[in-house]
Image (cartoon, rainbow, N blue to C red; front, side, top):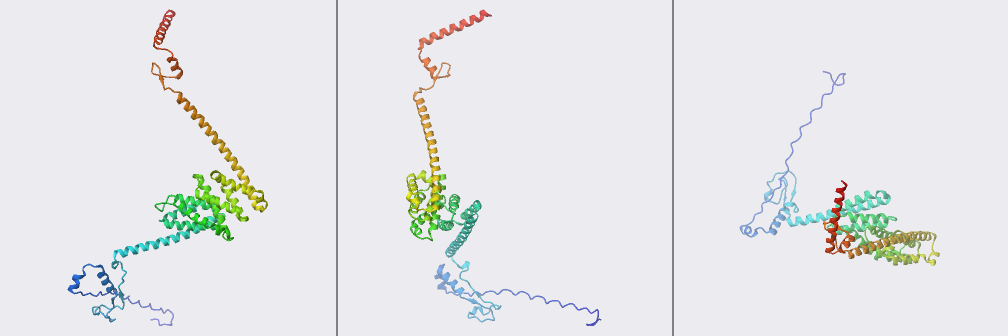
Length: 410
């Protein structure tokens, strides 16, 4: 045997680990037995108040191990494991059904609130991304409308979404066109509420009305003026886009005209540029649906005293608007001439048709049952029955003569 320290000595293997200890059984709680007298048993019945009182008594009882002394005599012989248990009053089996329904309703409301908060946060992110990259409009519009239908279930939630959408859109400059497109898309695609058809637009117009009521504050503040300018351009885009499918909304039309008059009355370059831009966007629509008020606005812009005291940028916009107005008037004149031509052609066709109907005496048929023209029927009407017989005899003689000539030629 080679001793340690010499060449060829090998270290003996380590001893095997000790076997694991067997798992200890979980301690069991000892439920004390509640003793009732015979009279109490008859009086208790099935009253829920007594049952809840018993549960509260049980919840205040603590069962301990044999090594830990307890104040309850029935628990002194319980097995010892060093763990203390306490009954919970909010355990599902101890809570009445009505209380469980209330808790479930409260849980659902809390979950819906969390879902709405997350959706509003996502809405701000999507709108910011669309502002930075307008080419992704189709993708972002589908994403927002899909999440809107999944998350919104009540009109109150939709009103919160409209408020957030409006505030975000009014905070971004040059975003009014995309905001108006999104408004029409959401109004057409939203199906989350029972009153979903046209609900988004109704709530949006309500929010616009609240913004219109606050216009005096926005006009007097230099810091809030850009928000008002974005709101005016948004109204012009909204009215112009809704006019493509139907008549523009009456509130949007009146609010836009009112704001344009107030902006033109101010001698500020920013207000004037906003008014001229809005007229350039929706001037053709305003001329069709509110021609008198729109012409008054154009007359105020064409005033020489108004143009002499304006800056070069305002003059450039006014010149551009004048060119656009000239094109609108030419297009309106062409459309008017086409409409008048169609109207006159329709009147002529109606008069001819009515004259034919007035002079028509019905359909006439000949002896063979075939319909006759009006000239043929008039020709036949000139002869009476005797003349008809004479004509028939003459016709028979003519046929006999023709047959005789044919036989002679043969």
